[in-house]
Length: 249
Image (tube, rainbow, N blue to C red):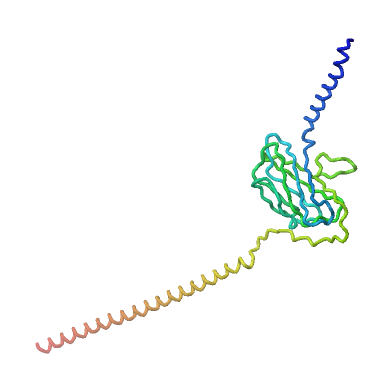
């Protein structure tokens, strides 16, 4: 074996190794896609904390259209407000968290958004289970928690917290937003007023109609009496004239 062959052998091994690594990464590329969360104040019971989320794109043909976040225990949906989001995306609170979505992002573009939390709970770490929806309908769920010391395939983003500051207190959570199907008092009052007005107007119209009917009835009776009198008067005149003629004869 020549010296040239010995010199090329390590190079070939390096090339083959790099190719194998590239192929492995290509086959498992989706496994590296995940959701990350960071905080400007990652401390238990910290108030007015900004959380930053990054959902890594894992589709080459579709972009993100919506993210659904399940809040951990100790954070109420009413304590969350939207900070930043992709252009055109809207924030909506749900029973257990919130959604943020809108016009689909371009394929391969990560979805980044920020929210502001009224207060972080008393805990060592908190998870934000995330469900991603793509413009083609594909759904990616990052909701798994570690079990038995094994790392899950699609782990939920976890935020580790330091101990609460001395004297920090837990504030009362805001009430969760709910959608009521029962009309409010303010909304029902105008309706009642309108109903009463309509009823009054209807009563007035009825009275007017009755008055008109009464007027028409009186007029009709008077007319009949006049006609009768005229008839009787004419008849009496005719009888008188006839008797006069008979007497002259």
